[in-house]
Image 1 (cartoon, chains in turn yellow, purple):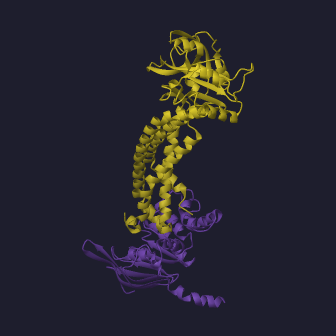
Image 2 (tube, each protein chain N blue to C red):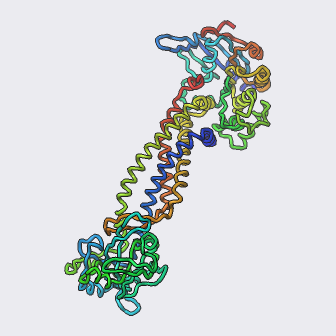
Image 3 (cartoon, each protein chain N blue to C red):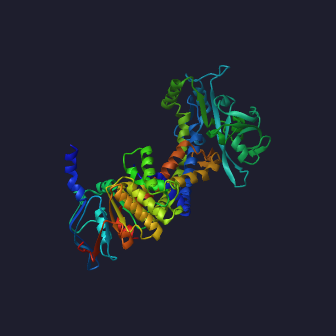
Length: 387
Length: 237
């Protein structure tokens, strides 16, 4: 049996000041790592949960996003009647030609202005997005200068509450409803009537994109292939979840900077843990010699001190996670390089983030603890007893 | 059969420790220090031997060699007929756990562990289960008169009590040989007498072989035999 863990726990408690200082250092590193991972998890969730697997999004050939795309009205008519598209109750195809533009509006917190996506759609667009529910007010009426805004747009931007008026395009638009899009990409959007939008932004000749709903998954795949292969249409079709999944790339800068910061901090924390453990070894050299005389082998001593270092790091991880818990669920936004607008998402401390953070802390404890533990096991018994 | 067994174990019983021309030479800068100089000694089973001598005479060096903490530079040292220095570090540690109980002048208890946990430490290396370990620890602590102090931390005990816990830790694995390095050096005369009485009892009632290093003639008086070392050499007994 190894040296009991009680020995390590009580020693950490005995040197409470040093233990807490080191644990706090590790906690800050874990907090940074958790924040970055939670941001990315939220962003991923926003995009991955967007899109219906039976929806096919159609863009002009070569376009990466709706904003750069244009699908003329003639092509829209062709697409609408392709086989495999589901029909609504009235027997009309579930296809929505949509106009997407970006407007600049001021934030409520006076931190400046930002780009927000406005989507013009026909009422069929609502049917294609059944997961999105009206939270307040009503949907816009066709032919009216009315808009419905997402909950996060309503809460984050000035003049975007129910009953307010926003000025864009050629005039004022009245906010008649607020929709709840959960944590999907639509939670960063404003919706309006497609024809009013086309008129205001002079987009009468073409839609930005066309969204169609297939009867089943085979039909969806077949629709996608057919539109991609038809040289006359010159279109690119995407399964809607794949299109949004691709946009998680907008989190790459956060990931890149965050990883570097967390890595540099982790190196610092490893040295802090190492320093604390070297001090512990020096302070307890006589105890270590006694344990050796009692019969504990060198590997037992190494294991014991590495465990102590890992316990120290786990304490840091727990503190770091406690520091970050108030940020869980916090709504924030990032610039999406594909849509040129802000994507709103929530900071999400998921189970995977928790496990990764703990693993990260354990790694810091191991790297910080191995050298002092090795040093502890190699000490001369006699020299230690004479100290 | 019992007779045959006794006959077989008889030589080991008479010579538990055999040091043959053992020397230990340290090099400090360019000087050679002879901590032990051609020492030959035999310690019989169940003996209580006191090693005396001035500081630096080599008493503790000899004791540490018997415990295989220190290696001789020359000569041969056998404990129970075995030259343990041929073993690996791990095997020496196991051997020490099984056969040696070591008592230090400064007690060397682990400050964060209770009396019970300190005494239990050597048993963690055995195959005993938790209940068996508890029984052994309680027996050892009761034997040294501390059955009612099991949950006390070392800092909550007096010096004499700490040394008695250290004795309990040394005997809990039922070792053959008890080695004590100035066990009363840090104690008042009353506590010293208590500790020496326990050691005498362990020798007489439980048949433990005791080798004790001491400066104190009163402590040495508890031993059957006293040998003196001077400048690393064992004086004729």
